[in-house]
Image: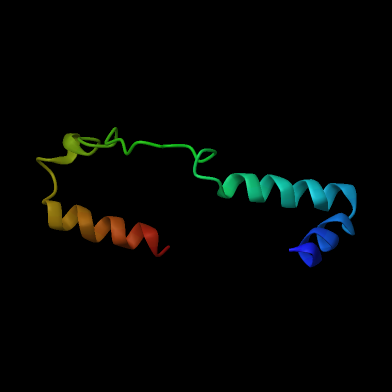
Length: 66
């Protein structure tokens, strides 16, 4: 542990601050609890009459690979 502290203190101020922020981000109490939202649900409903779900899935796959 002493070696780790020594290594941190040997960093320049900016790098030391990055390490401290990173360590704090690992703490469960510091993590944000983002809830999953489904705000995208129904976003393609306007295309329901034009395309099947399989066609939309294939199109989305094409878009991802472009």
